[in-house]
Image (tube, rainbow, N blue to C red; front, side, top):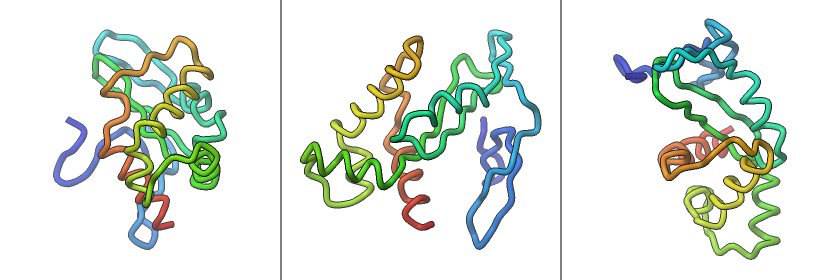
Length: 138
């Protein structure tokens, strides 16, 4: 379990600045999955952040059967896509939960990395909303 004693243990190094956690690096540069595969998360994060809709990405999955990624939307690019697509949303939390916005991100991820398959677990509302709120606050 990644959450212990109120802290999210991801294998990343970070520091608290003005009440916000800033990721500064990794304890180690490889994730070893439950199946024993060694995966370089930095490479996958670079693939994800190559898309203009993605401001930040963090891949986790140490000891798990699968990898997960926390994706922080690029606020300005996403806003432009919402306006251009006339997607009816009233807040950032509503935007990141909207099916059309999720479809934008799933398409962007699939286009940038054809081997990546999104599932219903790949973008949980709580992760999207948490990422959105953290970007709003900054």
